[in-house]
Length: 372
Image (cartoon, rainbow, N blue to C red; front, top):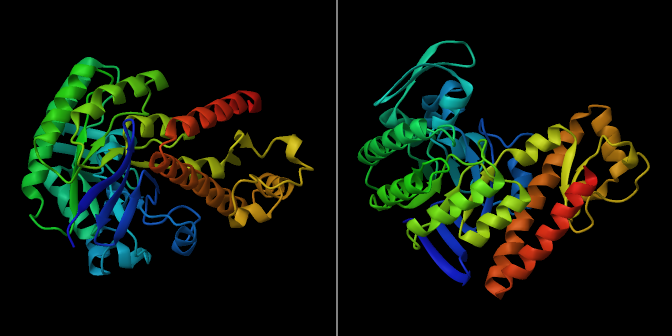
């Protein structure tokens, strides 16, 4: 089975497509829940299938530290280890190395750092990252990159240079077969010239897909959108485009309108752990006393298992710190984002994405302000 991406419809810059992988087809645009340690927090694979989730992400850094990529390989690979038969994407570990750890040394070849688990010294570089991801056996793997603060031009220039050098090394270390698709990552902070330079360098590698990294890490929303405007036209139209770590509903709309195909983010499960939920009338915090006697479902437009319970009951679970609250709210939030992106795909095919986007953004942003 070879990797192949086909665009089946367009509406402006937005695309509806299909990404073919060895573990199944992925209709795009698509939102991928994050299963950092080989599990989407609180949600078993059975329920992800019931929600028609077509792609999940797992984390190279965390699985490298625990339980170890060689153990996962010996247990049959990540698909078998976590009992998930759909497509999996693994990130390179670069973002976590730069954001979670005490870095001992950054050099042109890689990063030496202390594990956040036990303080032991570890090393990640392009070859090691490729080896770990090959052991994990994901369908889509990411090149090792450096994610800098988006507004510091000097640091961004250095990160772009390293990211390009490491991308070439990842390509050389990646087997020339169709078992895994290697995606390159575009860096450049909020600087248009650096984004264009990085996008064109990555495009020249002729890879299976391209990711836009280094966003949703401290820049403003207008800066994010402007960066996408500069970056996306520089990427090949016949390859999937992946915006890393972005999952706010309004950001998904803005990115799809500009031509992004793949998204991932921890936000649906993270919000759930704090008692919050996405709805078509904005984000709500179920700790709020106004839901104490609310008999309505969390969102009447969705039909998942969480919809069988009242907001009053869900609030009770949140306040009582019951684990069922994490499960039900995570299930709901994942379903909300998955259906939101699916609705945009249908709107692209029908040629009315702009209408959908305008209505959604007006309602969601207005209600968010009201709920706050």
